[in-house]
Amino acid sequence: MAPGSAYGVLRNGAMAVADGRIAWIGPRASLPAVELAGVPEHDLEGRWITPGLIDCHTHIVYAGNRAHEFEQRLEGASYEEIARRGGGIAATVAATRAADESTLFEQSAPRLRALLREGVTTIEIKSGYGLDVQTEATLLRVARRLGEAFDVTVRTTYLGAHAVPREFAGRADDYIAFVCDEALPTLARAGLVDAVDAFCESIAFTPAQTERVFRAARALGLPVKLHAEQLSDQGGAALAARYGALSADHLEHLSTSGIAALAHAGTVAVLLPAAFYFLRDTRVPPIAALDAAGVPMALATDCNPGTSPCTSLLLVLNMACTLFRMTPAQALAGITRHAARALGLQDTHGVLATGMAADFVVWDDLESPGDLAYRMGYNPCRAVVRSGRVRRLD
Image (cartoon, rainbow, N blue to C red; front, side, top):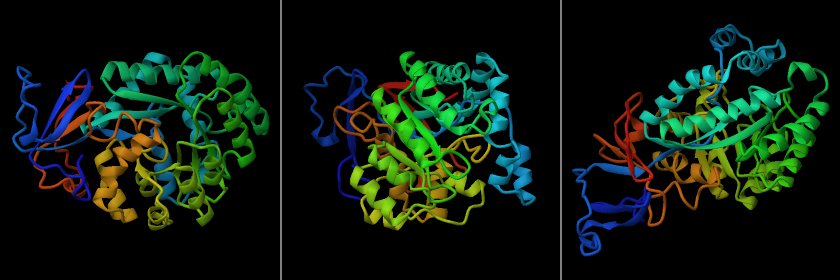
């Protein structure tokens, strides 16, 4: 959008679309009438348009349900305690391994539909609930199928270093060797992996183990990202920055040195307020320090069965403002242009500009773009256009 406000507002604007891209955008009075003679026109009657929304951190493909863990946390159990009892990720792995590909598709589709109805046109989908080659491949295939079936751009992320599976219990280093030497190369050769992620945390993998995964990804020419500093400061953000990571995600315990590393590397900070809310966390990510350092801040649902069963990116906007004290303009940038950067798509997605993908949302009943963050539980999405095609919302 054109400069001139916190949102880059262009009033009384017009846009031309050709071959799935924005061919022209600017003031309606400057619309090149000769070049566009005979092209169908659509009058949106003064409605607001934003770029298509981007959910850049999700785990939506899985089987099973962990509502009982929600009850356990309300009774006083911590996330770490539940994980150490065999719940958490391990419970979802068991349910997911027991499901076939059709079941995984059918259970995941409603979660995706909910996001699409709010204007999502691009989504990242992680694996990580199989932890063996066969199931991880199935999860990534389902992610690709969802993109084809629902007309949404999908970026797949291999998250093999999510947890240690039961067959490797007590042998985390051996499992990381399996991830690096067998699983990742096999999945990459199959063309199923767009990026590689890991969970660097006290209840998951050490920085040294994480670095082995990053080296393996780099050898295959794959970009990396990292679950970092969610529960403690393990130095994960600085490690991610050293490897030029697309993003470091969560970051409640991010240090000053970690912020500097992200800023130097240009790595995006992906903030996940729905997980913060669901876990009743109290340590807010260092928003002001990230902003002062010039670190781009993206937002995402972190949709997953255990810590963020959230399928509303619009609700995440409100949470980012109320819980993290982000401005509505920062929040909207976090689910458009900064989210695109977190997926390595900044050259084609996330803004309305000539040459970019014709992905945009038409909104009803907005006085300003800030209304998207203001109105909790309200979906004003009127129409979604992806690659220049109007997408059905039912």
